[in-house]
Length: 215
Image (tube, rainbow, N blue to C red; front, side, top):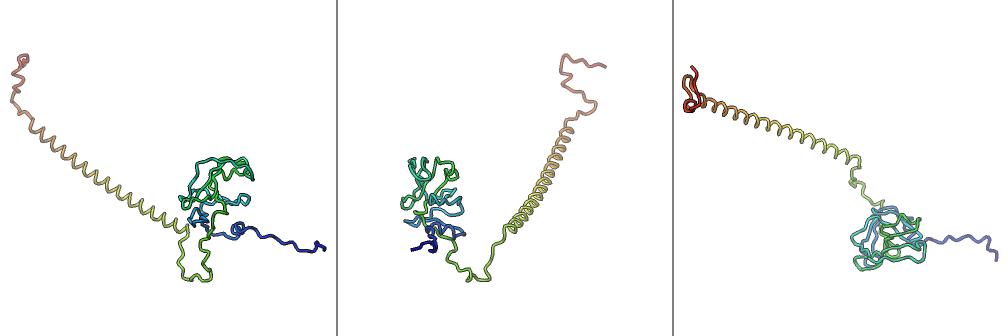
């Protein structure tokens, strides 16, 4: 039978590859066994089809890093060293942290790589029908409007700070002026009390035998 006219049948990609192709929203990664959340796409770095893994730059608190350094003896990471990643909930193996890699895998070194065979992927908002969204849904302000509001608040705080500083300086000057006036008054009073009347001879001079008063 002639096979030349037989159409080529394209084999569908594996489920995890199809998911990565179709999903564009925020993702949550869960342990396949206990459904514990072990990561999300906000820490996403890359997805490697050859390794069947997603790479995250941040370690979720639900992951536990092993202590044994292992050596890869086959595959595209042959010769690499790595440490296993485990689920904190059920202690299942979830992925690896590569410590040494071939040059083409340098981008995953010391990052957290989750094997897609061991995790579930959930897209946030996947159950919502966009056609059923209410028309009066409140929308969040844009980042530009938020920045404008923040700048206005900063200006108001700076203005209030300047006013408070000016009031403090004025109060300090008034306190210093009152202190100086009190000191001057005390000095004048002391001087008035210590003045020797005219015509009265200082007894301390007379009492000293070595002093001689010249006429």
